[in-house]
Length: 238
Image (cartoon, rainbow, N blue to C red; front, side):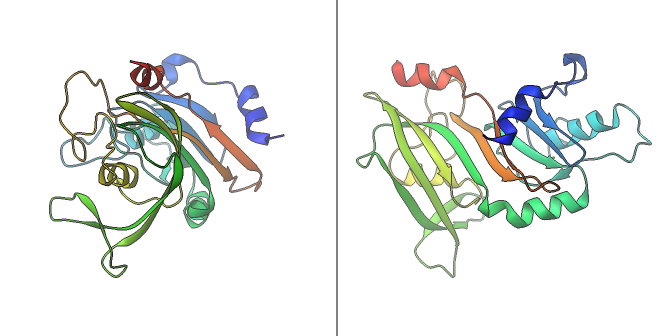
């Protein structure tokens, strides 16, 4: 029995009026806060946006409007602005350090719709990722010039134009999934940076579907899940 799936059933979400806009609270205790982020919401601030971010909104949420409150959240990992799904935040420094220290060992599953079809229906893509002057990632052969990136995948469904993939994120490099499938000639649908400009695609079709980790305090294995958007299935079926 997976402890988290049982806990998730029992966990009572806060009333909708208290939930931060664009974030559904999946699970919360004294050590961690797990949310389902909508597409279009930054994880942390950038030069253009300071307040409409998951980090800012969740700090407001744990303080419940009390600016003098010492409650806060800590960044453990990030999702791209246009990627939806599960994000885990720590509620104190010790939990943050533990989760970040163990992060590469935890299991992260994503779902994506990519253009075209892959010749191998299951496999692992491996490369070294580097970043150019305009912050775009690309693969290099020299391990001294990039960071190891490994992406496992399995084709779940395909049509003439699209494939639905289940992805195991074996390392967590910036834009890793998007770069790997773009370089395979099958960019993620809706990807304006690594794909092609196209009409009729409603969003970047990349979703963090689940994370399995060990709880920082109890060390129990816990799996947190966020439902895959129905749009992904309808796009492949179109």
